[in-house]
Every structure is written in C-alpha cells, then in structure tokens.
Length: 219
Length: 219
Image (tube, rainbow over all chains, first blue to last red; front, side, top):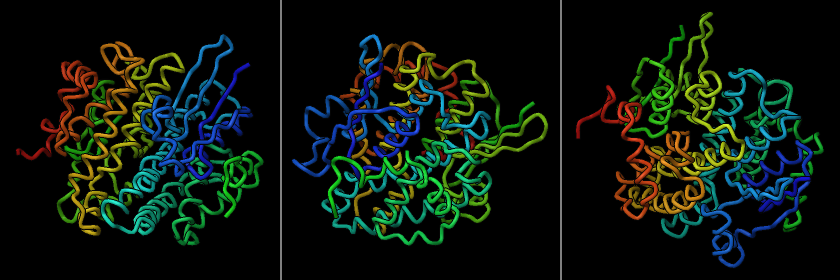
C-alpha cells in the first residue's frame, strides 16, 4: 500500500489541482496544511524549504510499497506522475494531439495565469511597487480567460477536451475561483462556465473545493 | 513527410526551448519570426491572435503526412507532444519518478520563473506601476536559481537528471541566459553552470541559441 501526504493550502489553486488529481484517481492522502500567511508564511520556514526549495505548495510525499520515499513539487509534474503511475481513470486522452491540446490549456493556466497572481508576487506588487495587487491579478485573469475561451472552442464537449475530465479541467476550475476572488466578471466566458458547472457535479470536484479542506477559514 | 513551422522570437526563452526540442529530435522546421516589440508587438496583431489567443510565442504548426494541420502553443505542451510523436532520442527518462523530477525542474522554470519576466509583464511593471522592470525580473531569477540549484542536486549527472539531456536542461539553459540579461550574478549556481557548459557542447544547443536565429539583432 502506498502512503500519500499532500502539503497543501486550502486556497492555493495549484494545491487544489493536485487534490483533484488524487480524488479523481481515487487515492486517499494525508492532508498537511501549510499556512501561506501565518508566521510570515510557513512555506518560507527552513523546515519547509528543505521539503520544497521553491517555497510553494503543493508538495506530494509518496511512500512506495518497499518503503522508498518520493517527494515531488510542481502541480503539473505531480499530475503527470499520477497519470503514469495510476493510469485509470485517465486524465489525458489517448491521441497525442488531443493530449497536447489538454496540456496547452493546462499550461495556459499553470504558466500563463496563475504565476502572476501567486501570493509572493502579489505581496511584492503591493510592498515593493505600491501597486494595486487585486487589479494586477484581475488584469492577467481577464487576459487569460479570454484566451482560454478561444483555446477550448475547437475541442470542447462536456469538458474542455471532449466528454471526459482531463488535466485541462483540473486546471480550469481552480482558476475560475481565483478570477472571481480578484473581482473579475466571469460571465462573458460562457463556455468555461458551462464546463465548470459540469465538473462541479462530480464528487471528486466537490471534495477538492477550498471550503471543504481541513485548513479552510470560514469567511 | 511532416512540414513544421515555428513561430518564434530569437530572445524568447519559451521559443528557444522548442527550438531545442526540434533540434534534439532532428526535426527541420521553417522559422516564422514574430517580433515582440515591433508594431506594438506582432503577437498582439489580429492575425497572430487567430493563431495563438494567448499572444505568446512559440506556436508550432505541424502538417501531418495526410495533410492535417495541427497547431500548438505552450512550450511544455509542444515538447511533450514531440516526445510522444518522436520518442527517440528520448528527452524524458523511462522511470516515472525520474520523469517527474525532470518535469519538476522544467516547471520550476516554466511556471516559477519565466512568466514573471515575460515581456508583457515587464512592460506592465514599468508602464502601470512605474517599477524597475529589470530589478523585478532579477528578483525572481535569483529566487528561482537558488531553488533550482537545490532541486537538481539529488539527480544531477552530466545534465540535470543523469547523463542524458532532458526537458529539464532544455528549460534551464535559456533561463540562465535570461538571468544574465537581467543583471543576475549567476556565479553562485555552480551546479547549474556546469550543466549549462555540458549542454553548450552539443550542436543542437549551439544552433538553438538566440544569436544564431534569422531574426537575431546584433547587439
């Protein structure tokens, strides 16, 4: 039996993606909360930096049947690892081009949107540049959502790419939540909203929602 | 025969990664220059946005033997596609955990560093926030390089992960070039520099360098 432990923060969209991957694959895991705001950010502690030098969540600790301990960070790398080790249910299509379309949408979120609204980035926008961090984050979300709406059009079915959930949906749903938090009007993105609604009917998506996590703070 | 066309900008590190992937796989391609500064940025033109709604380079156009035209953006999605369609020489190890380590390093660059020094981001730091764009970029590069130096330690051989070139190296080399451009002293990162030197001995890396591209501007 594999023992899994996920270092996560309830509102971190990258942690959310991995919670989704684990839920969709039916993998139970221990939840290790990393509070990104408390104590100057627990991710900056020497203890956590030894676990993850990038000082980000999530980090997945995976103990093999023989006791070997693996440790992985970067949500997309973790999700690809889960896909390779636990192939069913598949979160990537079989066809190479469709797989690429899934990864393209996932990366448009993972590298095109989320890094720009990362907590460390917003803190620097505010503290170093006296900027409006919420307006900054909203700008990149609008730009990204416009692109995503166009990117999914050629492949959309019930979900981003066809009628099965993929890594594209796993990235999209947390990003829409983030966009709303930063005050973005998401109503123009009707295709994305329809996909989100379809995802949220699934128990794996419901259980991965920030509000359902042990470290969630009631608003 | 497959016809390939790459929309690229000489100094774009994401374009550079895909040039490396194509060179390492031995795939010739047509070079379609997209000037990110001229005409208010050619990536913002209606024509290019139809090709790539994210308004980024690279975009790869790939014509199948039967004439089907595929179009892909997002460097990591393109590199994974190349790996699946042209498996040899492999740019990912066989072992799932080592593959994940490669992707972790690649993503630490792709989502953890490069998005924060993206041209559109630097322009906004300067124009909207009156910030020092070069200092902004340098900050995230230092933070990222420190993490990368630690991330590669457990797996380093001649390259980031063992003794074969992988997608981790393909992401690392252009990032080091970017860091130097922003004035970062890269000398503390001795492991990364050693890997870079090993890569630059390879003709595929030499040919992908910005200075060797048709749209390069002599400094």
